Image 1 (cartoon, rainbow, N blue to C red):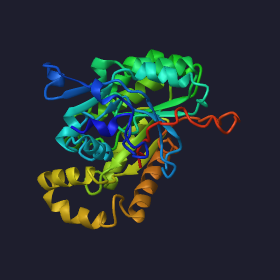
Image 2: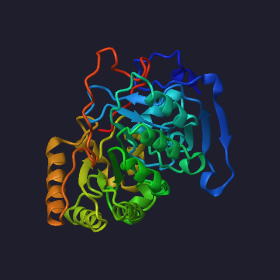
Image 3: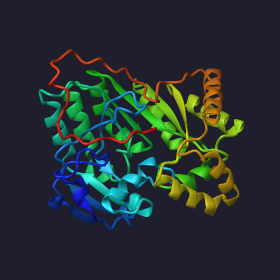
Image 4: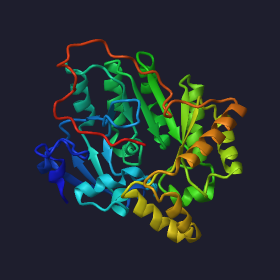
Length: 350
C-alpha cells in the first residue's frame, strides 16, 4: 500500500494529498456483523481542512473528511478514484478498506483556533459520507460538530446515513450560534434499484425519515436528488414518485444531479451495468461518449422536470443542494488567507 503518497513529505500540489505520518498507521478488523469484511486503517492526521480547487463548481472553499473510502458501496461514487493513490482497489477496496483519521476532532479544533483561519464555511460529506458505518464505532462527528459549534463556524453536512440523527442535539446547539445546513441524498425511491446500486446505505425511506425528523426539530433539511440515473430512475413517473416522497418528508428544497462517471467510478459502474442491465451498456457508451458528464440537453431536461414537480408539490430548488447561508468573511490582511500553508486539496463533488 502506497501510504507515502499521503505522508507529509508528499507533493502537496496533488489532489489526493493529506497530511499524516505514514509510520503511524494502525490496521484493524472487527468481527462483528456490521463490520465483517471491512478493514480500518487508523491514522493521525496533521491537517483536516481541505481546500476545494478553484475550478470547482462548489459554492464553498473548504471541506472536512474524517474518512477515506466508504462502506455505503454506491457503485457510482465519484470518489473511488482517490483509493488508487493508496494502491488500493477502486472497487471492492474502496468499499471495504476505510481510512480513519482518528484525531480529526482535535486537529480541527486546533486549526479553527488558528489566527490564520477566517471562519469560512466548511462542507462535510462532499467526498465520502461522514456518517457511513464506521462512524458508529469511531464517533468522530460529535467532536467535529463540537469544535465547529464552539468556534461558531458555519458548516453543512451532506449524508445518506441515518446515523446523523444521533447528533441531533449537538447540531441544534451549533445551529443556535452559527449557520448550519443539513442535506440528505436521495436520488430515487425505487427499492429494487436501491438494493443493487447503493447496497450499503439505509433505504431511501429511512433517509427521508431523517429529513422529517430534522424538520420536526426546527432544522430545515434539503434533499440532493442524486444521482438521477439515466434509463433507470429518470422516467417521468419515477421522477414524480421521488419528488412526491421528498415533499411529503418536509424537505426545504430539492436539487437534482444527473449521474456523472469519472475515471475509477466509470469502470466500476459500467461493470455493474453489464451484470444487471446489459441491454443498457451501448446506450450509456453513447450518452457518456464525450466524458464524465451526460450531455447538457439531458441534464437540463431532468432539472426542468424536477423543478416543475417541486413547484407542484410546494418545494423549490436550492443552490447546489446545500440549504444554508454562507457568511462573507471579514476583511483581513492578505497574508492571512489559509488555515495551513500545506493544506490538502479536496476533489469537487460535481
